Image 1 (spheres, rainbow, N blue to C red):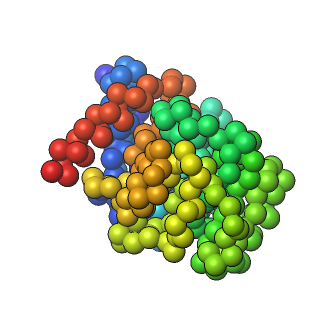
Image 2 (cartoon, rainbow, N blue to C red):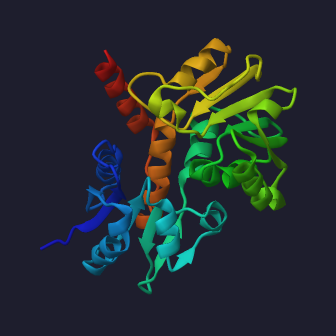
Length: 280
């Protein structure tokens, strides 16, 4: 009898998650024997449910909203990316039985930008909207690509200033509130706020995007988000949502768990085609 390795994504809510489909497609593509399920786990249940999952022989977990900080606290050891992000979206059992915490969000974003869309980050001016956990997860990998500057803009100053201070040692990063945005244009504007989930926009001025600039929304939906639509009105060369990032961060987690890196292009194309059908 062949034992099937068990993986899961924990979140609350979780019924909308595409992760089980993506991970099963990876498993088929790479010939891996595994099962990946989505489980609704509240913050109050998190520690008990994670211990039970790994106690029953589970090999790895993804953790999504609102559990990433709890996963960061749970892990026995943290990658450098996870230490900086102060959030974990991937837990993996190590050979000695300890649990490694990793954050694959930022590298997933970078891989989608640079690999799938050929958007260069080197020496570019980057603007991130929002100073929540989503921003924390992407800043380290973005700064590792050596942009000329990275500014975090937020409705209130405190959180943005804190994050900028924590990452100041690895790149040219600063922060401001929307009313104090510098009089300059940006090559890439990334929406890391939750505004798209309610079909709203952060308070963005026209003329923010440089010529040949791009926009990227970490959120995704069957229909273009409000921020993706805004990017089109600003003549962005690319105005993208986060579906590619979702697949790329999942591929990074799969590699951490299985030691095999799946190919993502066909899976991104498949999911894009499906949502265009559903949107019509």
